[in-house]
Each structure stands twice: as structure tokens, then as C-alpha cells.
Image (tube, rainbow, N blue to C red):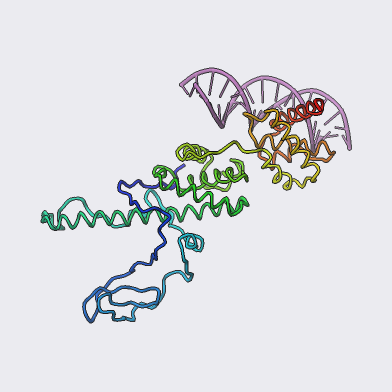
Length: 329
DNA sequence: ATGGTTTTTACTGCGTC
DNA sequence: GACGCGGTAAAAACCAT
């Protein structure tokens, strides 16, 4: 039940996620230059350590600890990066980041002068800005990795992942994450994206590849749909047909019949209120029945993750609707 | 919280191979 | 006797109110 939570931060940067394409190899280490006493800056690009003031190259740390790949924009970086944020509990940085105390006291407990106070105020502000920026970035990276993993486990195409990441970014931008797990929102985003792009996966399927449990997943899904005003129409049963059919190795003819049944049912409004997956499962069972192909309810139930009872109920309705259609014609 | 609807679970009887 | 199938009742899950 307990999974990763995102800490809420009061002060947020107004930098939007999209425009973070700048080079993020900030100076990694600081020391003082033996010549001029200026600050040393690690230039990992060239594997050198140089003095920021006089430019003296100090051949000290020539091992490039950075990644071996290059990225030219944020998206590419997300894609190439093989590392994510470390698994975190409660706080993205495990509380390791710098915190500047709010009391305007020095290390000995003496009050600071007004100049110093002002300075600390500024430092606090910027420290906080960088930290939240960082946290969002890591957050996003981890989420995208998660989305990618689940998407490939579900065999979802690229455009779904992109849609999912867009949804996730929106959730992040609108501060919907505090109090929710990254995995949860990532899972929900993916599920929503899959439905929006007409390649739906059932809740069970998605839940199976997600690290969070089903309850939380559904809760989170409802939440982000509501908060982001996502327009998601009920899944079309027909969208499931192709996948179920191929999973069961059903003939094209049977699959075609299944689709017909569904279209008929839809025209009659038979599908409203019923679960699309159940309908699809029923059709995938009834289709082969009409072409004398053998498929058992148990098999369909297995691949569609729908109970046999539901399949029975639905497919009766489907056939009835079909008869009526023939009678009317 | 509640009530109505849908789905699932569990069990039973029937026919067939 | 195992299997596929149909039906039923009760429980659980879902959804709008």
C-alpha cells in the first residue's frame, strides 16, 4: 500500500517543463586554484578541471563520470538515459539536499546583520528553486521510464507513450502529484493515453504490469481524469477484438463476425452501461460459434480477463440483437 | 453513506465425448 | 468421469446521488 510519495513544495518555479533544454552539466566540484586562488570548475565535457578565474587547467580528475552518450534536447535525454532517480521514500532526495535554516542565526546562535539576513533570504529562495526544479525533473524521468516499461510490456505503440507522457507532464505542471505515487500517476496516464488513442488495455492488464495495486490505480485514474478534464469516451469494444482474436488464434472470418455482432449491438444501444471488455469477450466467443470454430468460454475468459458468466450473459444478448437485425432486414 | 446496476464467485445439473 | 455449457443465488464492485 505504501509506495513512493512526492513531497509537496510550497515554492515552485515558474519554469515550464518544456523549455528545459539547456545543458545540464553544471559545475560538479569546487576547489581553489593553486595559482590564483579562484574557484575550480570541473569541465566533464573535456575531462579537465579548470580554474574559473584564470583558466588554468588542473589535470586532476580526468575520468569522465558522465554518461557516454550525448543528448541534444530534453526528450532525447529522457530516452537515452538508462538511469532513473533512485528509489525514494517520502522525499525525492531522501532529505539529502541542502536545507538552509530559517532562523537568521549563525552557527553560534548569534543573530545576523541585516545584510547577511538579506543574503540568506536570497540563498534560501534560489536553493529552493533549484531543488524543486530538480525534483520535478527526476520525478519526470522516473515516471517516463515507468511509462516506457509498462507500455512495452503491454505492447503499446510509440504514440501512446507520447500521449501518456504529455498527460503526465500536465499532471506534474498542475501539481496533482503531491500525495500520490509517481507510479500511480504514470500508470493512470498510460491507461488514459491508451484509451484516448484507441488502443485500450483493460484495467486488469494495465494493473498487472504496474507496480501499484489496482485500487490505487483506479483511484488515481479517476482523479487525474477529473482534474485534467480529460475527454475520454467509453472504450469501444471493437478495439479489443483484434488483440483477443490473435491471442486465441481465431480465423479472420470469425473475427469479422464478432465485429458485426458488436456493431449491431452498438446500434441498438445494447452496450450502454456494460463493460466494453465483457462485450468484446462475448463477441470473440460468439463469432467463432457462428462459423463453427471451436473456442471455449474458459479460453476467452482467460485472455480477456472476464468471467465466463459475463461472457454468457453478453453473448446471449449479442445473438438476440443479431436475430432482430436479420428479422428487420 | 446508500441504492441500483453490473460483474464475479461458487455451485449445480445436463449432455456429450 | 471429464469437459463444455447454462443457469442461479449471493457477494463484491462500481457508480451516481
